[in-house]
Image 1 (tube, rainbow, N blue to C red):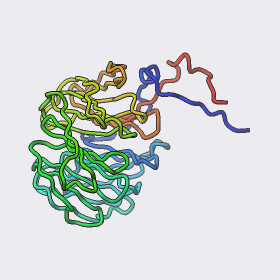
Image 2: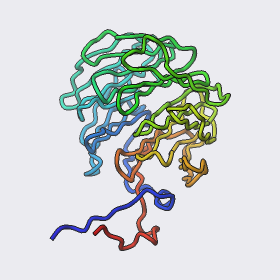
Image 3: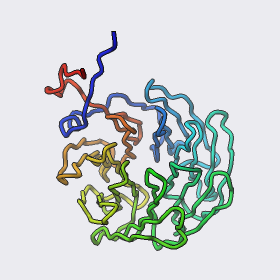
Image 4: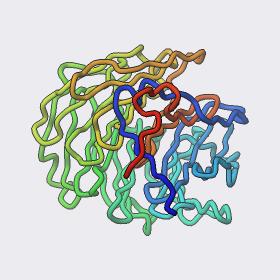
Length: 328
């Protein structure tokens, strides 16, 4: 007999019930970055304790810890391969990006080109390309198979970069504007430039929703702006406590783009409805810095990283309407 399958839609009620279901508290420094692999149950984290850690979320286990004592580590992203990552340094003297195999702890390639801290890293889902943005006011375009950068775009400020899910478009945000580029013809300049309504503070992160219809931008002033990515219309702006210059305010779309979750300058976590623009839920923290935050692909779960790694899931006992409901 087939097992009963249970469906759980992501509603406001479900979001409000979410709480930490599992946490890893063995970090000796703050988590600075994390990434879910799109096609597996793996998650990778980078931490100020100079470690890169690989988790199998489905089995709630840490599979591997790799130390990067020489270079430090700040940003980390999966490639298409679930045990290969690209990461940025945090030692102040070598701003190279590194392609690392977590299987055997081997560097497969170094990407040299930036001359200051790398603050943004985004990989293309469609091919081997990726982009990086730095405090040296450049955005570099790379091919994982080549050490030298394939393209350079100059910016006026701290850049935030992101590919859309199709890998056809990438965005660069800085100085109150989001610029969209055709990934195949980026040298022609942006094909759209969108204003975020007079917020000229430093861009922190920019992200597309999974379906590519929405784009969000966070800024050091503590704003999370959500725009229609086709029209450039500013749909809503959420406001949290501002973050310090060295911190990053991170936010993430839920898988179907109905909700946005974010950190805050006071360490709290918030959830908003894109449709209404209203706050749906919040979780207070004892920490005083913004957590990194990512929604798990295709799951009713998100993760936060601060001095510990936490996985947030619905508490089914709080969902009265849900009790006993099964799929036919």
